[in-house]
Length: 244
Image (tube, rainbow, N blue to C red; front, side):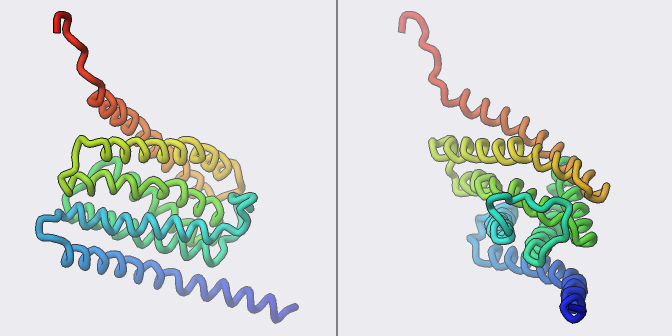
């Protein structure tokens, strides 16, 4: 019994000592992926295009890792305020490394916006805190799934424009699919996830970051509604003039 307990403690220590290595190697991986895309892509492709290609890679990886770390799909947000599993910590470390890369990438491209800066800050501080506490893995991985599931379509919208595909039915379809998935995930499951995180026995920093992320999501949701309204308005046929 004592030997088993010592094994569990040793496993926790190993996870703690390797966490920084996961994040550092992750940052190096995302930068390497960016440079490879930059080198392989046509010279016509922009800096933003290459970054979005890497961001799409991360979104797909994050959703897959989040799904693989769910222990029981009959209750995917159970247990709450519990110790994080190794698979949850790995999923969070991958996304933390990406967030550090993406924040630096946006800065180097002079693409520093208030909403994006707040998003990066909340995500980096929140995930780093969760890894440091080694708790809240269930809530944080669920949040990872909710926030990243619409990201591939977000980046596809801009990638299509880079290829010169604009104002087509394909663009409209991608916009609507993105808006629906974002709305269901972030404004449907998001508030519930924020509620259970805030009302559970989690550290105050985790609760604050969960609330901040939901506020950022609500702001983006309002912008997306305006975007969809504008897109649908452009598709309406012009009213007929009397006598035509």
